[in-house]
Amino acid sequence: MADRLGPIEAPPDLALLGPLGPEIAQLFTRPFLVLHRASSLYTARICLLLLFDLGWEGRLRSGTTLDGLCEGLPEQARKPLAWMLPFLAGEGLLRQDGPTFTLVGQPDLDLAGLREAVEIEAPGHGVNFDLLDGVRSHIPPFFTEGKAGEGLLFDLTLFPLWLSYFRNENLGYFPNNLLTFLALRDGLPAGARILELGAGAGSFAQLLGQGSAAEGWLSRIAEYRFTDVAPTFLRRAQRDLKASAPGLPLTFQLLDLNHPLGDQGIAAESLDAIVGINVLHVAQDLEPTLRDLRSRLKPGGRLVIGECLKADLDTPLYLEFFFSFIKSFTEVTLDPHWRPRHGFLTPEVWVSALEHAGFRDIVCVPPPRPLMDRHPNFNAGAISASS
Ligand SMILES: C[S@@+](CC[C@H](N)C(=O)[O-])C[C@H]1O[C@@H](n2cnc3c(N)ncnc32)[C@H](O)[C@@H]1O
Image (cartoon, rainbow, N blue to C red; front, side, top):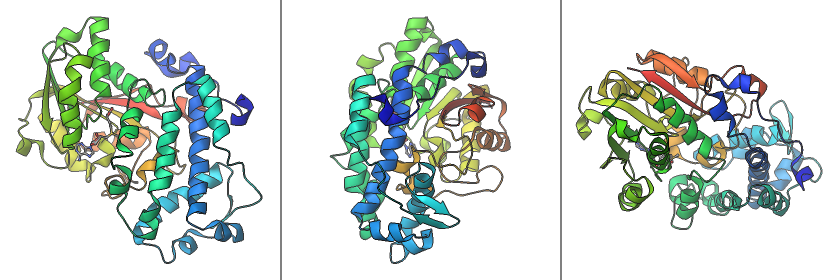
């Protein structure tokens, strides 16, 4: 069955994972590695099938450039297509000759076989693929009618699938939370006041509540302010989190990181830590946002972010597929030095953005190089930076 997936990457050597290596190494189980490989293949196949659904197989067979494919489409189609074509070439589903992309022969587009292989090795993760199927079936009006991706992808049918995705039980998402947990833990003072940005489905708060209790340091947390811009997430967390993160001293607040936090009731120098998992890349203008966050931290307080990371900016990452349709992901202010692209960034770009905003003592968990040079598919990391 595993031969359907091709070679599965070996886990990284412990020596590459830095001082917290023994705790990080637990992520690289066989089910995780299988899921990671299958997710990349499944995303690529869904992506090509989507282009077929849109009626573009003939154009791809004759060979097309990005400009050619975008002709007659709404302008918003360009960014996702600019991502998809090289992604499909990288996955071997299109041939690339300079700017031209061509579909050759009959590529393997079997989805059921990938699901079967994952059900055997990482049972229960088919729901991640349901989400990809849902994107394929919901997104065509983005291209054909210029409808907004947000409305199409976060509707009532897909919302439960997003909730299933952002869970600690999802081996594909858990690394983001675990690495942030490890980065936050060390150096957290007693009586800590912590604010989480974009706390969403609450998976990090759950891990923090349960993990810190199991390790005996939950009592160091005096306040955990759970925030998100979306009232639905906040209401859900208010209902469920007390039971799933028992003992975490929770407060709840609607908060938009694109507006000054001071105007939203967060006093200057009032926090020991600000945490954000997979949210800071949606800051419309990263520089003022990072400076604003820094100003809310007590001296020596820390910003701890968990982010999907790319080994290099030019190689598309399968996780970007969903988000390339979302304006908050793609329409951000760029700067050639510390915000050269929208979306997921390299660890080095994050470090320079944080330094540019005045942060210091920046620590990556795990140290990204040479790990990402040897394992370019390793795509999660946490970064801790002092005010
Ligand atoms: C990729 S999800 C991260 C999910 C979360 N860490 C979890 O485990 O469920 C991003 C979250 O950021 C929130 N978000 C998006 N834009 C935001 C903004 N401008 N300010 C605050 N939160 C935002 C979304 O509502 C969503 O809950």
